[in-house]
Length: 451
Image 1 (cartoon, rainbow, N blue to C red):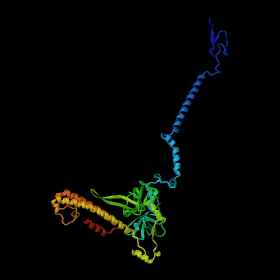
Image 2 (spheres, rainbow, N blue to C red; image 1 turned 30 degrees about the vertical axis):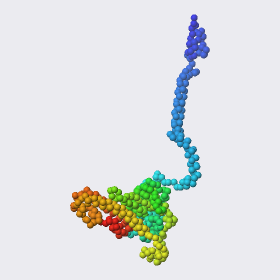
Image 3 (cartoon, helix red, strand yellow; image 1 turned 60 degrees about the vertical axis):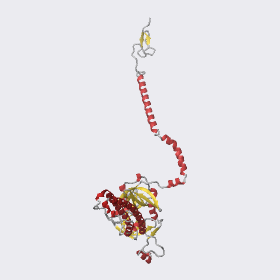
Image 4 (cartoon, helix red, strand yellow; image 1 turned 90 degrees about the horizontal axis):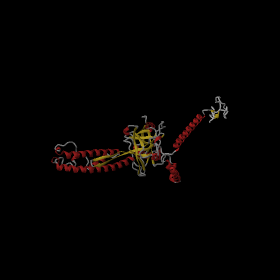
């Protein structure tokens, strides 16, 4: 038979009824003392475990973010592998003379450093001038105090000019020096020069095909006219470096600056080439936008006195007989005189004129054949101007009796109009080159192109 027992309220042991004190010290029938070990010990362990889990999660998140930020982008691993090889190659290349020259060369200007176009022009325009020589003129720009750069053909045949600055004021100046083999000249203002802006000179190393350039000058007398284009090519002809550009250039632009976006002069505007060619439909004008400027390296050489030139001495320093011969345009007897710039331009112009007139004469021969076919197929056309060598040149107005064969006549008239337009362009170019009108009439008569 089991003995009766009582349960200790403190440790929950079962003790015989005969004992009044449990082994834990709690007396039978007395409430347990709660001041000892805490009864919520499990809750404490639960909170500690939760904190540990949170700490682990935070550590994992931090490690994940750090690993992503330090991971190289795609392809960087290959670049990192190739970096030592590239560094070794650069070290070997650096020992070559070409690498040393490139390392010592000034860095190219980047477009990011270029100012706004309006800001650049506000500094360029005050340095550009117009040059008046009486019956003509051109443009120029200040490269030093009182010293103006222009084209040699602008001041051909004169020793004094009038310089018109950007504020509209006119000042007398003298031809200071002109290049012997280049279309460049320097003009010096008389007296102390007034304060004015100067244009810096770029170098050929600063010029790149495709870069934007701006031409400033006085085309047709309209001072400070600005046109914009790009560098189409850099060419060398007869020892002269020319910068080809599609910026619009007209008579009067000669001698003006061609500047880059930083306001530096890359060239001096000198000429526009316009060619006439014969196509299937008739004469066509080619090269309307072919403008050329002499590279600024030649300008720097002229200013520094490193370019062969012809100085202009003051009248007081010249021999009286020499001055008289110069005024009378007589060559000095002791040495054969070189042809002047105007004479050289006229000679070149006559050669170009003759070549173009020959081209137009071939086109006119084609119209002769078409006219002969028209006359053979149209009875009314046979009686028209039998004594004229080229009756279709006389007029393109409607002619009585020709309407019956209108289709052939329309084509003849169309080609005749093309021929006349092309001849007008050729004559205008010859006039600008200084070709005498008598020479033009002589060539037209020789090739049967008179009307």
